[in-house]
Length: 247
Image (tube, rainbow, N blue to C red):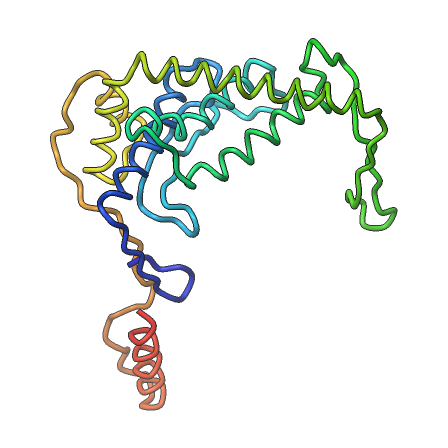
């Protein structure tokens, strides 16, 4: 059971699905470890968080205000790591990569249309934006280029994404032993920090099997204070009954 705000929600995940999630997150984490231009891997977990069944956290070593083309190409490989890990292990892909595909497509389009990171298209911005004069936010975007240019942009975005997907497949295939070790460790421990990930990739065994990290209710279970009134005590009891019903 996981507490979301003031209510508890249960999420039962079949063992087969947990294995898929473990390989997906292990693929993301391993690509983050293999690529020097990617943000360092901070933690990986298969404990559900909100709508996410698993999460890999990447944190920069210092505050960054600008990023390079090499960084975004590495980010695409990290994003595709989960999808490719599923392909390598199970020979098929799942819907778990839907958000990854959306993010990768957005990055590819920004690289081509906004950041001038395509040699073929060049340092030209495409897609004139209109902003509300009062809200100061984007409300529409108009295409200010021809059909021919549109096809060239789509082709360049596809080329960037497919080239990084191919690179990811090759890198994970070459490091399948590390992928297997990391995925099985994630499955066993359910969360791993950066040091533990390094130990596993170096072939070391984690000495202690950790208990799953579960978020618990913030409701205090201590006895009421002596100066509390009877009405306050009954109110606390009623709240406790409501929480127990929603669990």
